[in-house]
Amino acid sequence: MRLVSLSRHNRAVYGLLDGKSLRVASGESLRRWPDMQSVLTDQATQKVQWEDSGELDLESDVLLPTISSPGKLLCVGMNYQAHIREMGREPPDHPTIFVRHADTVVGHNDSLRRPRNSTHYDFEGELAFVIGKRARHVSRQNALEHVAGYTIFMDGSVRDFQRHTSQFTMGKNFPASGAMGPVLVTTDEISNPAQL
Image (tube, rainbow, N blue to C red; front, side):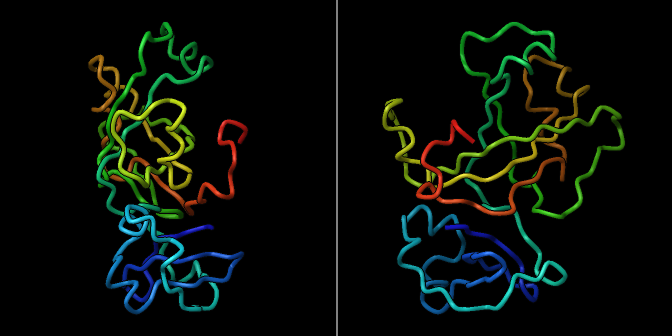
């Protein structure tokens, strides 16, 4: 499945995209699961009533971040050798984790903004794993069972602010500095994310 979050006629909805054809959640489904995050948390993608809504129209439909109000955005920094060398650092002994706040992320085709107090705004294309099932103390072997799907993430970095301290968070949380989407592709369509 390919799922989208969007604003249609100034109303936030979510839908199922098939090519350009869009079916949006409707009726009791929309009341029970008001956004895509609630659908994924309840593992209810197969239970939603989808209503035919014609074609996705990028002239009037506004694509929102795939998950418009995530509980957490956890990011892993320095996670591949070429980037570690580019930054002039040593490979870390443990994953470098930083957070992004939801209000720093815009949707597909929305404008990104370089902060006016920096000229070192850089882009990083990332694959985002969207967790759909509550997880704690999960083994490496079972980790992918908790993934609902995948989306594209543009992790914009304000490099000079990122280097002010050993923490990346400061340079990763300027308003509208990152983007998510356009779609969430469910795990049934991607058997091995390591081969993308």
